[in-house]
Length: 243
Image (tube, rainbow, N blue to C red; front, side):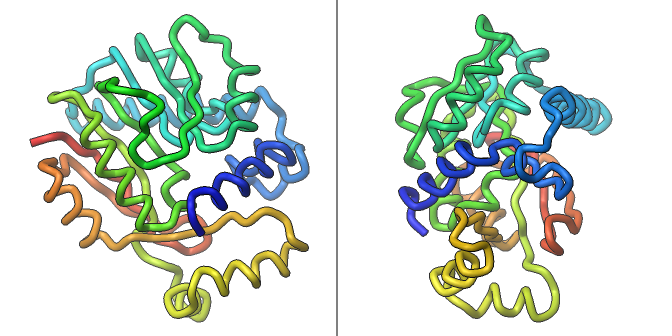
């Protein structure tokens, strides 16, 4: 799936069921999310992250943050309570429109639609903190690796990159099929199974590949941890600094 197809799918999600697409609680499908509760989950997630940074004694600067894959602003709004400036970026204009509608922090937070791994739309901005979770997993690895490379480039010298990505597929027949079948074939099945609804792909990149990518781009892993979530995938969270 190229980025244009990815964009088309997420434009559809943004128009049809945006809150569920961002946080896929099965009880909240078909626009059943309570909006206040939805945004509260963002506040809880960001506070949990900042608490973890404190426990790990990882320093961070509260000036300028980037939230990649911001959707309707669930985490961007929460970040704006802790940073002087926040930019939320997303590939879907439908998500950006909703994010602007919910933006109660306009003096500190702005949203930008992006459609390429160079993130040209944000220009020469540099960031103290770059954050992305539940996003890279939906992007084909050849693009996801380009995004990670660009995140490192956009960090200030003392900046911190925090991202989550699946690093192993599920065990059993599902994982075997995901490894063996081309994505295009899987998408034909996904479209049929979901009555031609937009596709939410799931991808992974091995830890070895991620760690080599980080090293080759003159950065280092400050901390990482892994858990099994999201349909049996092993997910890994990375805290990255430039060398």
